[in-house]
Image 1: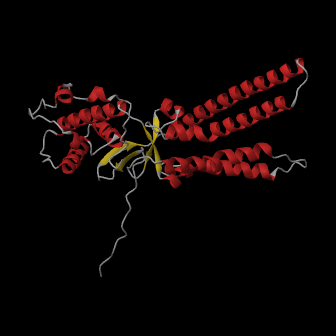
Image 2: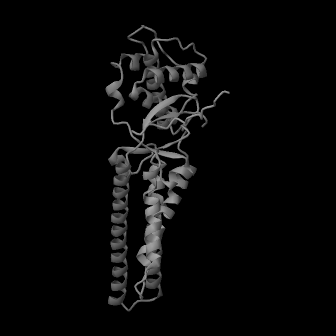
Length: 311
């Protein structure tokens, strides 16, 4: 009688190295951000937000006091002064709301996918499906931050027990700890917002691309120093890709992994109708990267912007 052994599921490596599969089927190596880096980034961002709110409060309080003082030194305050003070209060509330909710959205929707805290700690956000980071993803992960962080903290700070039994405070503390420790109990170091949004927080490349580019003859002339082949791309051939693909290509060149170089070259050649060949992958990609970047930068100077190949 044959014995069927259970199929073992291969677990991801524990050191944070993962493989990101792009929509074109290209495997790109990435490294997940350390939990300490994520915590440090959050502390920096919260510090910036608190400092911003403090400055806004002082500015608006000073403006309100000046209005009130000027009205008293004149003929006494009237309804116009009251209206001006009310306007300042409303404007302050709006700016506080924007600081709390728009801070993360503004920076994470940018080209770097990172807040100032993330940039200082060398990490950024990436879509787990390998595609472009969308507004829906960023919005989802930041709305969940309210449930994970701000709501339990507000509840904890607002409770007041007269009989010494602070059950609401205890529940708020447990609520906060549950979500705060969530990244410790999954191998991909995901918080609840990452799971809902379909995102990873990964290490941003630390090396500049220029440091790993071939001596710039290939990049500027399009001629390979290895095989002597000349790579010149027409405007139509460059127009099939946009900024997102340029960033992906930059990451591949920076990592300089032969299997990734070959896969990306094959994907681009298939898209352009070229014969990919073999042995000159890096020279081909450097030439395409440089010419695509020059085209996109020229388009931006003319007021045209192509976010990705679907734009």
